[in-house]
Image (cartoon, rainbow, N blue to C red; front, side, top):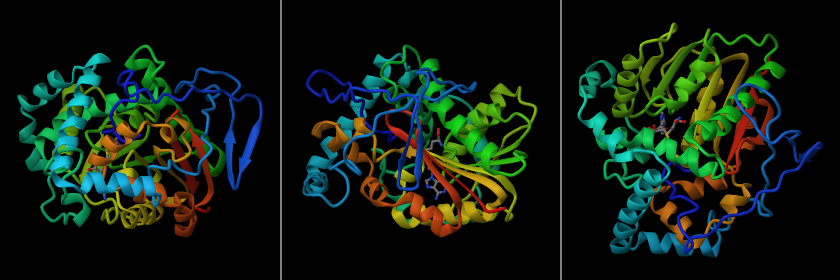
Amino acid sequence: MALWAPAQNLSVVFSANGSEARMRGMWRRRDSVVVRTASSEVSSSGGGEMAAYEEGQLERPNWAGETPLSRLVGAIISFKPLYSVLKLGARQVLISTAEKTNIPWREMTNEILESDVYKEMESIENPSVVYPDYYSNPFHAYDEGNLSWLAAAEAEAATMSMVRRATPDASSLEEANKIVRGNWLQAIERHHLQYSGNSTVRDILDVGCSVGVSTRFLADKFPSAKVTGLDLSPYFLAVAQFKEKERASRKNLINWVHANGEDSGLPSKSFDIVSMAYVLHECPARAIVGLVREAFRLLRPGGTIALTDNSPKSKVLQELSPVLFTLMKSTEPFLDEYYLTDLEGRMREAGFVNVTTVLTDKRHRTVTGTVPL
Ligand SMILES: C[S@@+](CC[C@H](N)C(=O)[O-])C[C@H]1O[C@@H](n2cnc3c(N)ncnc32)[C@H](O)[C@@H]1O
């Protein structure tokens, strides 16, 4: 799910909740995608079976792509006066729903903004980075997109909100993370164990690491690996580095790199796992292709790519109410391109094999693939 999507359970007015059904004890095959179904309902990063999440009837939500409904939403959003109202509305909804689920959004934001985070910029920023055109546009209701201190200060709370939205039944953020982040990590680990040939994980790259939340999950899951977080926003990376210094208890320190994930400048065949968590729905189709190709170059033979993001097949996403998807699309300009991209196809074109997709929570899929040995 988009980090910046408004909550699904906003209120009675916005009720769009799809009920969830579990399917157990069987394997289902759809094209070349194998979905492992569940033998137990609770899933965690500690292993065990992953719950199976219900797919909708459509290939993708009918508010996305080239449908009349999608075009209507696009026209509404492109009407500037209305867009400004929607943008503000989306922001207010996001903050208030986060705070209702005990995510202290404004407190967390102020803590960062009032800290010494600014000092990190000098050591993080790579002045030779050239920003792709899509990256400099207004985004997530921030006029400077991801290139601002406010966006960086709010990113961790937005990430927490996304995790809570994906798990409306979870009683705490911790439980929600166990499902969303735990199932994602489990999908990566399983894929790598099954296909890498030697299952070694020495080097991990987290492309689009933002303020480092996904990077820290990867580092905790694979404690003996050297983990690198890469992002195009030096503001986000400054927060990531600042927060990691505050903790300072990790044996293998995380390395932060300011670069474009499409052209990272990092050496070929230098990673065992390349992960992109919730990055691709923020990118136009051409950037998705570029990111997947660069991951292929960076991985060693037997290496695993893991792409986790909104699932076009998610029943919950297919059943979002018109108000919610219009609000969501108003702050996510590339959602249509993301939903129209045949991600598995693009991965195979780049050279990946063993391409496997699994719904890792009600809203998200994790797509994994291997660089041939
Ligand atoms: C939603 S955030 C990722 C959240 C994070 N991975 C997590 O799971 O908590 C998406 C990130 O992708 C980054 N991004 C977008 N395009 C990129 C590119 N071409 N190269 C590197 N980072 C990019 C953005 O700057 C943003 O920080």
